[in-house]
Length: 107
Image 1: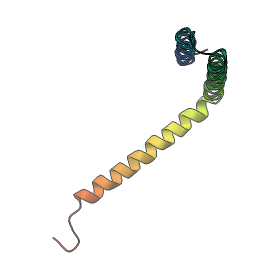
Image 2 (image 1 turned 60 degrees about the horizontal axis):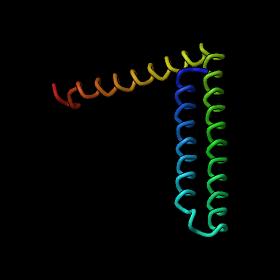
Image 3 (image 1 turned 120 degrees about the vertical axis):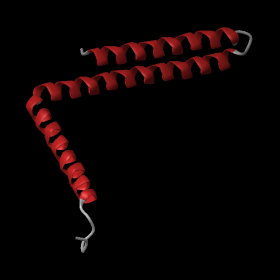
């Protein structure tokens, strides 16, 4: 995995750990409430944790796919970047050229 993917993975792992800590804290505070309310909260938090894990997996997969595509098509990526830079230069040069020209009809 690349450094960016590792960083994303670490951040998502921290998020999941925070959700787990929040659920344990919330459940600890609800000890005096009814069992149904506590189990409902636990089920909701478990669903949230599951969704967070799915999102993490999907994001990691997308980052890996994008990274692989760029590595597999390195010259295409370089060519597209060069084309974009060239076109930007043409546009900026054309605008600067128009600004330097005197209005029509002036000597």
